[in-house]
Length: 271
Image (tube, rainbow, N blue to C red; front, side):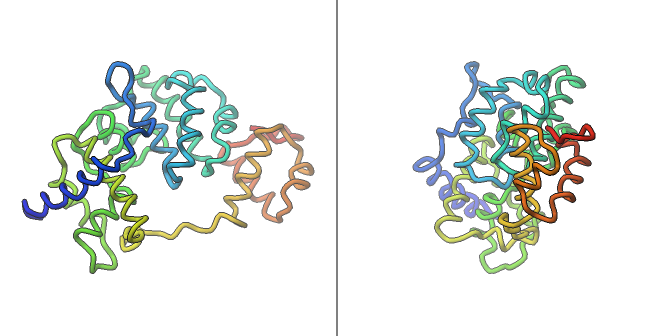
């Protein structure tokens, strides 16, 4: 990518962002000291995985209101966390978030790591999530990829390709990084979201693209139903069967027990 291509990309991305960027998203607001809180950014990033922004906003606000600090989350019970998370789906994310908070408090004296590599030691925080936290909190020029970012680079540089590798995209992200990585990545996210809505999801041309399975009728739906019922009250198996009429229910319950998302005292299932 030469200088003119970088300039054209910056003009397109920042032009859109300045005019139409989602500047009011709650996780894009600094604390009163002008700094961005790594705990709040981690919460937002885990919530945003495979979940639309519109669904995340009210859940994020409620979560931060209930657990305003990493210490508050670490001191809660997993049941409380799952209850507040209910409706977002992929409940393992809630457990990872809870475990990450405990790790920060118990093993790191409440201080978040400040590098991409160190952040990946936290449960549920992979390379790209760690990159997002590093860029948004510490404004560091790290490289990470997400579906909106893929969409932008495939649209501008790989329009005729059908299997674009993340490595190829990373090689373009690195020289494109602006003086303010935080704003640049926010701009990429918003511009990529716009491109998806206007010309389609170009990230489907990525070699890493996997079509998300249908939720209706899936085991994911049953898992969510079990968790949702148990947020209301503990239940016996026969009570769960009466509410969730699916032959896969026992297998789902076994999985949830193995993952320690629910517990069983020999008679009743609970969070």
